Image 1 (cartoon, helix red, strand yellow):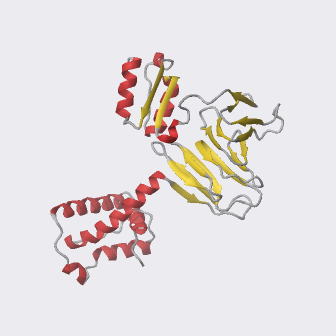
Image 2: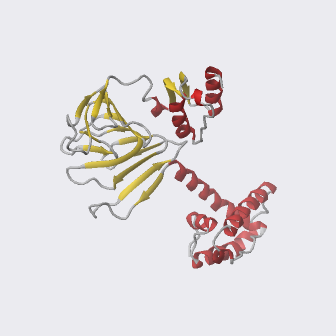
Image 3: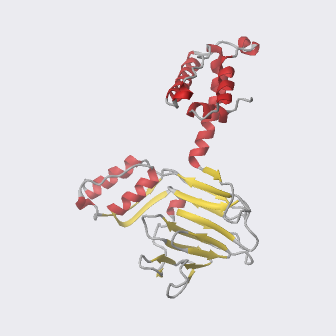
Length: 314
């Protein structure tokens, strides 16, 4: 069995089958001639190797009882270099996986094309290109589902969170973004759609023309046609309402700028939580309605909190 970074990652997480565990243990314990010919590792390599081995041991001890019963032999000092090289590959896989988690489901509802799911955790942002060439910029805490190959005559994706779409023009194949509350349909344009579960669903069109409606056929007025520089939002009581213009700085998140324009602290807290991947607890209720206007251009959380504390006096 080939020892790969993915296999060692499974071993550390306690997810290996008995055969895989045995293969990893044998790999760690073997001492081939090439290892004996290599120079002795440096002190720093020994320290790093020791830390890696401890992580593997901790992962093993936290596994199920039948997994923990296997106790692999500690690698000798010359084997650390082999462990280090694979650990570096694991680290690269984990870093990429944190930024953009892609999971492929077995089948979509039609039973034809596999569905891919892209999840962006809080504190991160992601970019991807869809099968038709459409570019998507996903904000923190967002999920996008799309088929591996669009069906003939139809391009549909499913969004939770916030995304900026730059859609490739194709009049014969409408592009649709479906959320829990709305359906956005375009032929070729650029627009921003916000559809977080705890926020109003808002469409902002930068270029082109967009049809914005709901799945409910009984909604009065039907879908709205929204032109460039305009927007629309879903109403809690049902239906769609126009938004006059795009608020200043509302699309700045795509360039990593956090912009507040007379926002209340309670609303700002939600965005800060997603932006930095932290939890915000406002302990004084009177602070919730205090407002702030300002722009933060790719700065650490401490800078944001210091500025807010000074202006809002907390």
